[in-house]
Image 1 (cartoon, helix red, strand yellow):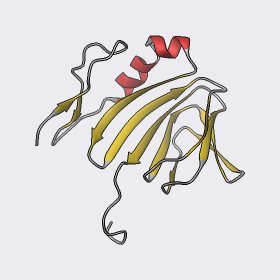
Image 2: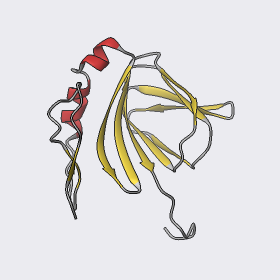
Image 3: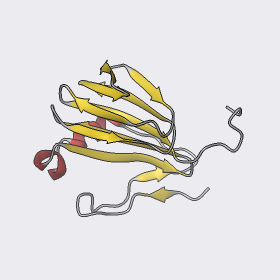
Image 4: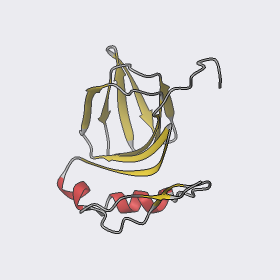
Length: 138
């Protein structure tokens, strides 16, 4: 398997973070600290770091300031969302659930939803980017 690294950007010019390989270790504590030191966090209501990206799966660490909202949108794949710090409100079809540190949820593809940070929140979003050909195959 070919190893893949993140591409450099003005925010992260180093461009040397391993994001896909046969084995990828992810130091969430390090990324949680990094995400709060970046200009994007200091100047905007959110920041994110993709920590793993391969064909079929993406894992993104997302930080939201208190009151930040990801307005209604859909994801093309199944998602899981795990709160690492803080508290957020996840809403679908007028129903809301509050999630605190250590809690998670899953959601099937193409369901409109929104996310609101009740407190400053960091969460891990896992997203399937392709669906299995056989929906009965787990």
